[in-house]
Image 1 (cartoon, rainbow, N blue to C red):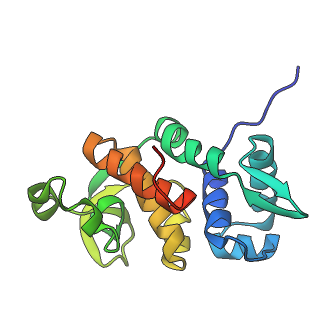
Image 2: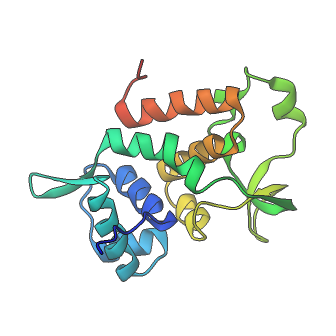
Length: 185
């Protein structure tokens, strides 16, 4: 019996990093180092991404399919890799508490954002104490700190994973602008 391999969390991280790289050339080793996984994990992740049509070949280079990438982050990730919240701890800000995104969400519920504890990926070396959220993949926080666009993609995905309707709607709008270059109507 044929069995299709299911996408894994590291596949989403690989797709996000590949999208963040844009037209920049890459190698398996470079991609692996950037997201702190093994070369074989990158190879396997890209294989699954190709089967899922998240990554396609265009003129002898592999790129992320914007439409499928959007659908993955907006519809699939929140259901398959749902938000798992934890206790209060030190960590790195994510979701609507990522410093570069705070202004994007302030108008929705200013009181909540100003009084709520930040949402953080747990890390004892993290600069902020807040409510922990399990990252999409264990190496995602370290990879995100090295790449601003990757960090924003993962933080926006966390907003969607958390599921608050107003924040989620705004996160999707921002994500669509990042992916497609404009809002999708």
